[in-house]
Image 1 (cartoon, one colour):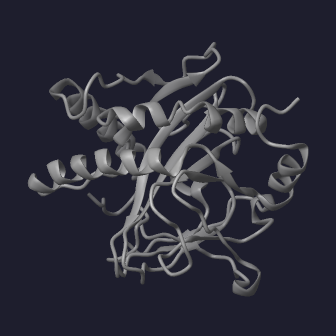
Image 2 (cartoon, rainbow, N blue to C red):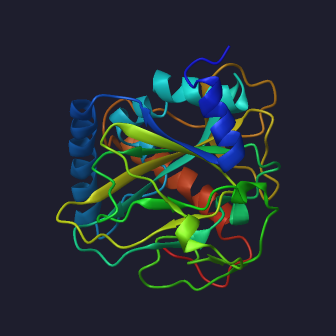
Length: 274
């Protein structure tokens, strides 16, 4: 029996490549996590850097969030009981921000051995059409890996500014409207993107990538966290959990893990984005 998703929800995910909304925590808890995240952002901004990839390694609330039971119950319904968090990252657009995400498939540069990957995109602020909510192209997860064109566009939030070479029917696209504390689930091959934020508040989305433990990276060895079940394969190095926010040991582990992760994401790229 499914743990969290209904059989109808699972069928919709298999048909469309996505399912939402899934309530994973109260709005008040989402607001509290947002406050912790924005404190960490100020720390990085003071160093002239930004907080994006693998923030769960340095913010304890995010370390707990990748292990959220409601999230993991839904993920287990889709990919089975033995689950790794391969990575996490923020897709944040400030108020009246021109940043956008072009139409793409997540799987393009990840180097994972199979497409058994589900993303839980957790809203820490309202995700609305005005604020640049994600848009999904239903059923496109059934396509194979499609070539992408790299742009490294200034306002594109993707690592290479990649754009899928596939015609997307804008009229068929679905807007992923979420309240804080709600999540969407989507397949690694689903074509999706999002527009700029024209609202007066930030749009903060925490994307967590989950894989079964038998999946490996074919580009290079990377880090991951076992968040449910057992890992009988050992394809990834084990991440260090933070004991308190921004502690020196956690920051060192964060830098090391992201250096390894970037080597995977940018393998063969002409340039890298910081």
